[in-house]
Each structure stands twice: as C-alpha cells, then as structure tokens.
Length: 530
Ligand SMILES: *[C@@H]1O[C@H](CO)[C@@H](O)[C@H](O)[C@H]1NC(C)=O
Ligand SMILES: *[C@@H]1O[C@H](CO)[C@@H](O)[C@H](O)[C@H]1NC(C)=O
Ligand SMILES: *[C@@H]1O[C@H](CO)[C@@H](O)[C@H](O)[C@H]1NC(C)=O
Ligand SMILES: *[C@@H]1O[C@H](CO)[C@@H](O)[C@H](O)[C@H]1NC(C)=O
Ligand SMILES: *[C@@H]1O[C@H](CO)[C@@H](O)[C@H](O)[C@H]1NC(C)=O
Ligand SMILES: [Zn+2]
Image 1 (cartoon, rainbow, N blue to C red):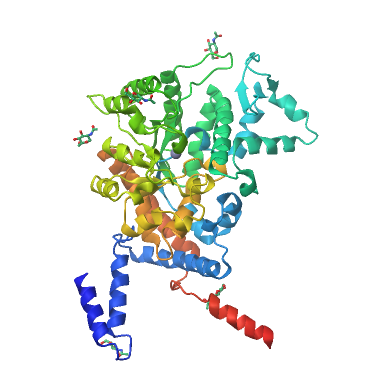
Image 2 (cartoon, helix red, strand yellow; image 1 turned 45 degrees about the vertical axis):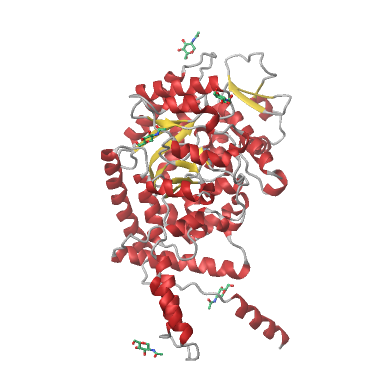
C-alpha cells in the first residue's frame, strides 16, 4: 500500500515528463492491477504446463465470447436463464465446463433435482396416477389403487387421452411442474408471483414422486444426471415428506429415509468408479410455529443417530422473506446444536435484497448457531462483521446463480454481489438449488454463469479448479472421506485436462481482453457514408 502511495507521489512530482511504459504512473498502475490479481478466487492454484495449455484454449473461447458480447450486448448471464439456455449450451466454454469434474453438489432440493421433461415422459405415464385441481387451481398428483375423496380425482391417462394431441397435455404438465417458459417476464411479473408458482410446482411434483416406487426411480435418475455432469458427490436437502404405497399406506419418516439411503447405496454400488456418495440435509419448511420446529429438531436428532453416514444435518427452507426468521425459534434451534447428539446445521440465510430486515439478520443467527455452510448468503456483503466472522471460521457460501436470477432476486448476474466476494477470494461453492425447475441439468449451467459473470473476464481455469476443490473441502464429509473424495476428483481432473488438451490440440495463446466496439462502430459509419 505504502509503495503505491510513494509511486503515485513520485508520479505527481514528475508530471511534466512524458509517460512512457517505464513512467512511475504506469508502474503504479501495473502494481495496483497486479495486487488485485493476488486475491481473486483461485489465484493460489499453480497450473501445470498441460493445464496452462487447456487454460489458453478455454480463455480463447471465453474472451471471444466476451468480446463479442461487449460489442453486441448479447451476454448470456445478463439474460434470464429460461430464455438463454439454448444459447449457453452452444457455447464452447459451456462444452468444456460440462466435461470438467466439478467435485460435489452441495445445495439442491429433493424434488427439483432431476429433469422435469424426463419425469413427464417416464413417471407421469405410469398406471394409477391421478390428478386434480383444487379450488385455488393447485394441481395435485397422486398414485392410488382407488381414488380417495379428498379431491375430484381423474386418471391422468384418461385426461391425456381426452386431448386431441396428447403432446399438448404434456406441454401443459411441463408448465405446471416447472417454471420453464419463453416469456418469463410476462409469466412472473414479481418475486412473490414467481415464488408462488415455484412452490406450486414443488407441491405437484411431491405428490407424484413421493410414491415409494416412483421415488426409487426418481432419486436414482437424479443421481445419474449428476454423475453424467461429472459430479462425484451430492448433498441434497429435503422436507422429508413421507413416502406412500399404492394402497395409501404411508411410511414413517425413518422408513422413508431408509429407502433414500438404500437407493443411494445401490446407485453407488452400480457406479463405484464414477461416483463417491450421497448425503441428505433434513430441511423442513420455515413458515411454521414453535411446536412444529420442536418436532423437526427432535426428528433431526433421531435421523442423525439412525443414519449417521447418510444424514448430514439440518436446515429450514421456503421463501426467506415470507418465512419466520431463525431467531423466532431460538430455543429449539439451540437445543439442536447442543449435547452429545448435536446435529450440524446448514442454514439458508441472507437470500434477500432487504438489507436490515429480519431475513437479512438470519445471517447473524446462522453464524452464531455455528452453521457449517450458508445457503445463498449473498447479503453478507452488507455485513462487514458477519463477513469477517464467516471468513475467520472458514464458513463458505453456497452460491446458486441461476436460482437467484430465475427466482427474481438478481437480474443481471454480472451484478451479483458474489462477484465482489470472488475478487476477494471469499470461500464459496457453486450449486444449482433446483435445476429441474428451470430446465438446467446438474451443475454445468451454474458453473458457466459463475465463470462468465461472477469471475469476470480475468477468472480462468484456476478459478474453476478452485470451485471444484472448494466443493470437496466444504462437503460435510469427515477428514478421511474428504481426502478420499479429493483423490478421486484429482484423478478425474487429470483425465479431463488430458482430454481437453487432446480434443482441441492446438497451441493457442489467450486473447487479451480487448475493447473494440467503438472503433468498429465508427468504422462502420464511415464506410456507410462512402
Ligand atoms: C523500459 O525499461 C526496460 C527495462 O529497463 C527497457 O528495456 C525498455 O527499453 C524501457 N522502455 C522505454 C520506452 O524506455
Ligand atoms: C471486435 O468485436 C467483434 C464483435 O463485435 C469481434 O467479432 C471481432 O473479432 C473483434 N475484433 C477484434 C480485432 O478484436
Ligand atoms: C400396502 O402395500 C404395501 C406395499 O405393497 C404392503 O407392504 C402393505 O402390506 C399394504 N398394506 C395394506 C394394509 O394392504
Ligand atoms: C417461539 O417461542 C419464543 C419464546 O417463547 C417466542 O419468543 C417466539 O416468538 C416464538 N416463535 C413463534 C414463531 O411463535
Ligand atoms: C459455536 O462453536 C463455538 C466453538 O466451538 C462454541 O464455543 C459455541 O458455544 C458454539 N455456539 C453455539 C450456539 O452452540
Ligand atoms: Zn435452496
């Protein structure tokens, strides 16, 4: 710092001299920029020569994409994912990210993990699936031997057959089970509208996939999608609705959890070299009273005891601004984290734009309750003390860029508060929250947004590598398991580097961020006049 001030003073003193590349001004400028580069997330990663080659290839694609967007203002992370998805998938940067082993996915929700179009083409065609609309126009789905009297049930197969074009029915179903639309601005005019549509998709999905045989197929498929996207370990949250049988029998929460674990272990046994493991964070709804929270935390302790390797911990979910703050449940939440049988917590907090309001303060409570990670948490940029505390306790944020965008918290991802945290090297992991809801698959789409928007033009392969390493480091696994997972990831990473180097096989040099829009435009104007 003093060095820069000194240089600036020297520069001021010699103001009359010509500013060649060795002038003190340019030296001060170089130094300042160089110092900024020492903090950006991933800067401590040292790349091998092969990684450098891959970095050049990647940065070439990235800079050509960014330079073009700088000119025509058509930048994918600035557009709603619901309309930008196809364009993203055509990007070479995206293609490389897809191949990349991304480590662990640490922030996901049960019913929104797998592709909705798959659920429709598969599970919604099973026998005995009934549907009905409530007076509030909420779609309900349920598998039943014989329909009960709780609603005006129709067999889905009958309703589908009544459509002149059955595919039209499936399109309608897609719009009821996901937020997918060509016109998000019209469909979701404000944050409360988009959240209520979102919660409505989850209610409909839950009724269908919590049918025990459907859940077994669904969870297996979800893990398969993550594996295909080169994810080795999954930690997902759920409200733990009780699974049910065709005859209406409901499993208890513990029996349901046992089914989850069995499916996850079967998936692992089928993919021992491509997958590491699955864990669950019990995360019921936050919009409830004290007595209900007491039930939750009691169950959380029971689950952790019975499934010590499968249940990672506890969280509370639901639109944060409309739910009750953590401090309203202090007694049960403190009880949860005390005693021999205490349970680790992974709170959603600071997923809000309302600085200084109750939900914003959830961050403080989450930190004081020794949360292992913070779900979203981007409001932390407005709390220097909380930020310093999180940093000193090495508590990362689980950042889900597309979720924040589609759920209308942040429109243009270049302005995501986490971009500032990235430049300071604050610990973060990238996850997908509810990829099925917006048509993303596993993590690649979110990694692309993080790379292009949260990291800015200068974030390179080291940033992506650090994100993957962070995801392993901040998983809920103990030291030994975490080291095993890291080793597995490292081997996949080396393969990935070799594959990309081979695939693109050229000694490309990275393009330097270069602004040419104004020149091009003025040239065009002149040409037109000739
Ligand atoms: C700047 O300094 C370098 C190293 O001393 C020298 O090689 C170069 O010629 C200098 N440039 C100018 C414009 O004086
Ligand atoms: C200038 O920007 C355009 C896009 O606006 C891009 O296609 C072109 O390659 C750029 N030219 C240079 C010299 O960077
Ligand atoms: C309901 O179905 C399940 C699974 O097929 C079976 O285990 C259970 O015994 C049945 N219960 C009744 C009351 O029929
Ligand atoms: C729960 O109980 C505490 C202590 O009695 C009280 O302060 C708090 O407001 C209650 N929370 C709710 C959601 O009723
Ligand atoms: C959080 O952890 C610290 C250090 O282990 C401990 O002293 C403190 O009591 C914990 N806080 C709560 C609320 O349990
Ligand atoms: Zn979430």
